[in-house]
Length: 284
Ligand SMILES: NC(=O)c1ccc[n+]([C@@H]2O[C@H](COP(=O)([O-])OP(=O)(O)OC[C@H]3O[C@@H](n4cnc5c(N)ncnc54)[C@H](OP(=O)(O)O)[C@@H]3O)[C@@H](O)[C@H]2O)c1
Image (cartoon, rainbow, N blue to C red; front, side, top):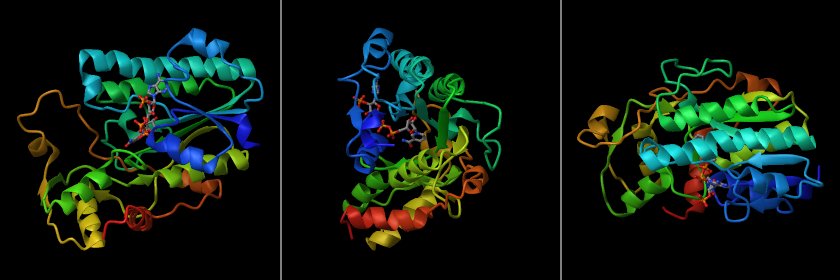
């Protein structure tokens, strides 16, 4: 498949930017060029030559989605738009690649498999679950379920690096467990599934390696940077005490990677990608 046959939607987001690096010749658009919540705009778009849509667009403000305005925006982008894209993909015989999240689960299982029933806790999780259900009706679809995404944008690692440079010793939650997912890993998995014509369906995709809490990941970041900051463990409840409008979060975000590995894909460890990411950010 040639790059120009790929359409990247949500091209300015963390994943969208990484996808543009992988596929420099792809058509790449964001909301200002094509609003995927607008059916007429989508239906009038020139789909000639497009063989694959990669939908990296989403409303990702988890707490924002709990507000009246945010709830509407989240449902539009995360649920209505994927339904429209499914209709477009089926109409034009296009493969639809869509990104989902561990937030479609309540986190009570300690190893989420692809066939776990939906149990979202938050508006964001509900809207993403609705999107998954629509996209699963596309004849040719890959839904990649991921968690804790780190790329070119606002993310946990950048926040910790900023705190480290300011000499702050943060309190970080120690009861949410998962694995980081660096955007190059997500892009590698997308490219692998497409290139190898893997069976359509849902695939969990995170980096591999020992699951860790946010607090322990913060400790690793400070060790790698050698800035010597310390971390105080707090529970999610303690962290958000006194704050309102906070979305409930799954405590266990660990995704089972067996189905992905059965395709022959070899995952990279989150720790190695974290070291590489920090080196690239040039903070030592
Ligand atoms: N970040 C995480 O930790 C995480 C965890 C699990 C799963 N995911 C999923 O991974 C995917 C990529 O996440 P990300 O971190 O790369 O997100 P991101 O950085 O927030 O980027 C989302 C992109 O979607 C665009 N967008 C929003 N509304 C749109 C619309 N109506 N039409 C077209 N584009 C629109 C945004 O454009 P504007 O900036 O112009 O609004 C933005 O460029 C999403 O599906 C997300 O749900 C993320």
